[in-house]
Length: 201
Image (cartoon, rainbow, N blue to C red; front, side, top):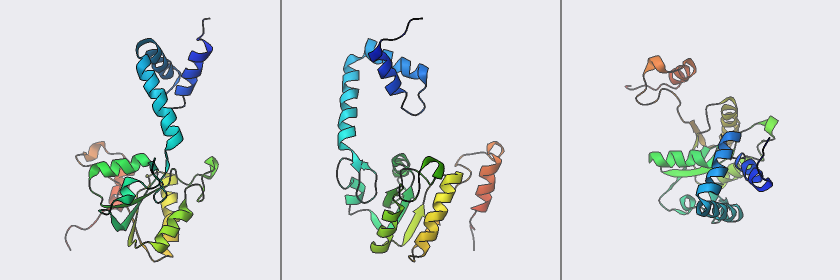
């Protein structure tokens, strides 16, 4: 049976490290780059090397940046009284894209998962608590995902933040805007009812 040359196979295996990319997908990407887009392959390789060597975590919020302090933390327009905790840099970008949040962030880069070796130290929760102790944060907004691990992470942070006298809130999860109830799963509906708020007092 014919096989790829060692360098082509090495490229395919490297591409498989990307999330959601299986053997066939990695093979298609590798062959496309080598057969049709050598210039693109060179640009991709250079960008990967440059990012891997220069991108680190912001010293304040832990998002990915090539500067010691990211643009959001450096901006005087962000409200220092609000601090939103997210699991990943992608979550931060999603919230920013909504244009609805004016405060600052803290990125965990994961969620509590002892089986994966992710505890409070790996998530920087000690750094988060130090920020709460010295910065003028009035509200800590927990925006971890609605999973068992995400809920456990939110609960853990909430209990520790409460000892510092910081108000803690949790983003609402429920029926999406424009969603029809008959197509919403039971777990989402249950959480939507539990998170309901009064419209008139």
